[in-house]
Length: 161
Image (tube, rainbow, N blue to C red):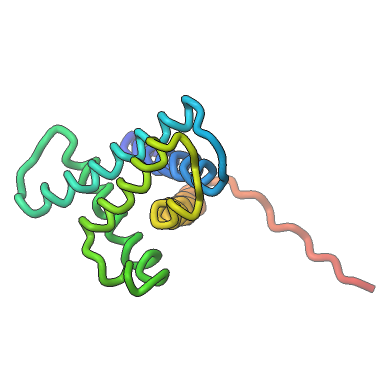
């Protein structure tokens, strides 16, 4: 039997993964923004702000109404920067955490201002959300693999003659 907190955890995880999917889908295609695209990018900016809020809350050890959400966003961003973005370029590796968030926010602001997605101009943001998408997929897969009682049977392996 699932505990209530497990449902909340998996719901949050899947929500984050679906959000990352939407962001990646939007940023990897060139084209004009529609109203839904703009809403997604505004949510991206809000997510970046949560990351910065989480960083502040960790440093100051103060609590607010959304402490857990902000610290979770900050933790995921740290992991993404360490595993995904550092491997992309030496410039990214040397940049400070807050500078990277600022750079991604600038990419999103520029996209909103121009009303057009140009994938080459949102590379850092795109790589960041690709990594989040991949990691939430892995985490949710592990979650379900370890907790689901009924699993699909293994597919039979047929020998070729």
